[in-house]
Every structure is written in C-alpha cells, then in structure tokens.
Image 1 (cartoon, rainbow, N blue to C red):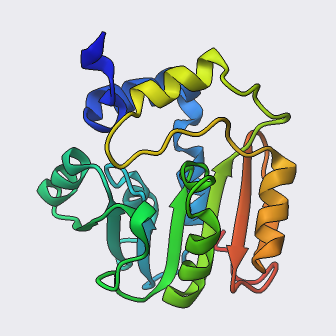
Image 2: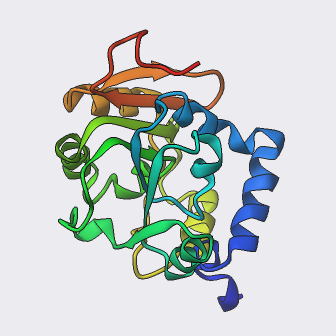
Length: 206
C-alpha cells in the first residue's frame, strides 16, 4: 500500500476523486463561498491553491496567482497557464509572494494548526488589503489517533505536509479568528469563514 502514501498531493485524479466521493454535488460550494468575497478586477492570491479550482469561480478580470507546495499541482497550474509560486509555507511566508487585494485560503488552515497558523494569519494581513479563510470544521474534536485522521495523514504524507491530530471545531476556529482580529461567520453546513478588512454586509459580492 506504499504507493498510496502521499498520493493525495501527488495525483490530481485521486485528489478530485476523493473530493467527489466526500462531497458529491457540493464539492464546489467552498469555492463559491470564497468567490463571494472577491470583487471585479481585484488581484487574488490563492494560498494552498491545489489545481486552481477557485479561478473558475471568480470573474475573468481578476488577476489570479496560486501559491502551492505540491510539485505535481504546481506543474498542473503552470500547464493551465496560471501563475504559480511554489513554496512550503511551514517554513514561513516568502518575500517572493506579491501583495494583493485579497488573499484566499480554502480548507487548508488546519494543516498549519500545530506549526504556523497564527503566524500565517498575521502575514496575510500584511500582504493583502483583505483576507478570506474558508475552513471545514467539526462539531466536536476528533479523538486523538483516530483511524480516519491516520488515514488522511497517510494519504497526505509528503515532505511539505505536517500530520495533524484533528481539524478545527467551530468554536476553535472562531476563537482563533477573533484572537487575530478576523471576523467570523457561519455558513450552511460544514464551513466557517474568517475574514479580515471587510465592511460587514457591504463588501460581499452577490
């Protein structure tokens, strides 16, 4: 079974298949949530961009740049003509990443919870006018060492992935956002949104 180790970030086909199996028709909802916070013509930095799915949900006149650690996904992005900065954010926020109107991170902050999540949240605020964090949250903490989390860590095991014991619960995510001056909002279902630099009720794109 060693060929499966780290395959989540080595194979786009496996990545998309697992996403479809887990979320079905709702697999794009997280990108739709993020896109609602991006205005026409804005520059966007998509952190932990995967294969750039968010780009399909924002307006074409937006300048889109992906930040991605996976060499395979970075190659896919470049083949699609998407500007991509390849880096491992566990090592810090690189100076090579330009400033932007909006920084977006979709379902990835939990991967940094034991290493650099708090540092990244502050770096985002310095690198963009506004920040949007969309995160999948749990109703209650997952048991440490659960078989599901072990499986996820195995499928994600690469040199740029740090294993985690569990994802954030809703209350943990909200507290983290508040501690760093981010607003927090609930969405229908499994997601929470942390945002910085927005005017409540005014900056959302319908």
